[in-house]
Length: 465
Image: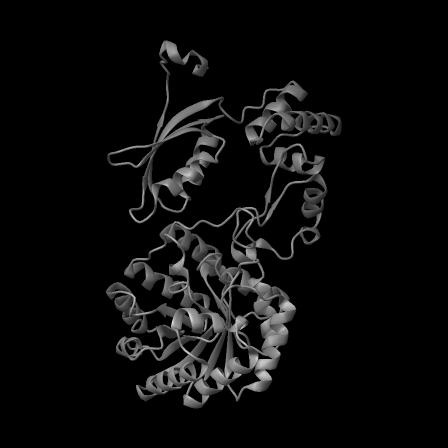
């Protein structure tokens, strides 16, 4: 059975501009434990007093997962890991020539001596040991084997193959891991695959196929540079492609959202599994198929993750999607009217970036000549937004500026951090927008004031309605 070690608290916190508080780390660890990951890499206690405190508290939290501390090959670092009460430590030492020559200024024989001595020291403290040969993918294979064998003979029971620069292709990962498995004494092999070319998860899955045992992940694929495999993508891939169903998928969406909120690191809309577009359908061919049978364009039911399917209406839309949307509002039209409505929507779609439901109803009114009393018309409001103290205000501003309903955004002083001027078709849209704003990671509180009347100066006549 494949194992997962999640390194959000170590590799994930190495994401630029990300810094977790101790209580946040403890909550992340508890949520990861509910998902069912086998190991949680809690951090390197030597980094700072707060990291040390977090590792200690996580080690004492009574989690089912094995809690792992990270350490360079130093006695002080390994000693701190033991003091934190973890059961396992990672002894981390590079093996590639460029790292040994440039960073460590050590020869191969010196490196082997350091690796063996520090693994043995960790074992003498009663710790289980995973040895990580940093930059393994750029290490000569013969020396890589010697380094790993040295660690195993000194007491390590796991080896972590690190593709530190994400340079391997899946077939190369398969060949390398298969050869390494054959060359090493009995041990478990972990895969730490970086995503510099977007191949991290593919490499990890091929490594498992070649005989490795464990994939390292982070929530939302966080980490140095472009990160490592995303926990949610990895678990769903194992669930759907490999039939591995021992993880709790229902925890994944809320876990991803929680990490967005506490890290300020936002996932792209088109990100697999957790992105807002992952279960969104747009073109007429796709929407027609998925409305008839979701399996035509969905690998699995989004409810497996507690998510819902979304149909976007615009110039690409087919008749079936428009009819379904109108039926949601109790609007019945004839087949002839539906044809005209779809034709009109395509014209409107050529002129506007986004079509809202109010636009669709407006088109239906014009085509049918009937008044459809669904939405009040044109509403303006000022939304005051307070941002969590650990989140960069600019990150929230960037999200707001991408919303069509938001006309202007100001960073301000006082009890709130941001003021946004919004224009929506009516109260229904305003309510939906406010809910959307509250869901933005980092938003703590909103206060909305509906505009009753605008008074503009002479210099701003072009801005008036």
